[in-house]
Length: 80
Image (tube, rainbow, N blue to C red; front, side):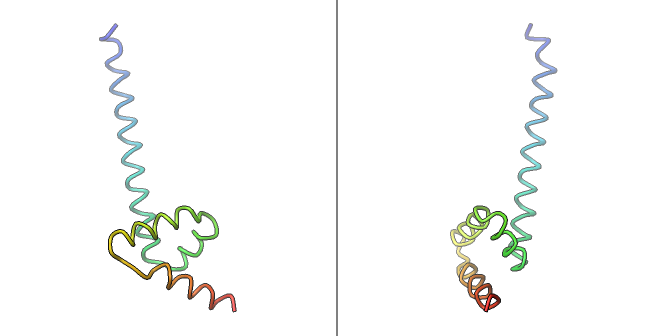
C-alpha cells in the first residue's frame, strides 16, 4: 500500500510547492507595484483596503515611515 501512495504523495508535494512559489512571487510583484505607484495604492485602497493596511504595516516595520501620511494627504487634496 505504501508503494502505491508514493507517486501520489510526490504529485501532492509538487503541487503544494508550486502553489507556494506562485504565492511568494505574487506577493513580491504586488508589493513592488504598490511601492512604486501611489495611484495603484489608491486603487488598492478602494478595492482591497485590508491588503493596503498590510503593505503600510510591513513598510513601517521595516523602517520606512510616512508613506501612509503622504498618500492620505494627496488623496484628500485630490478630492477638494
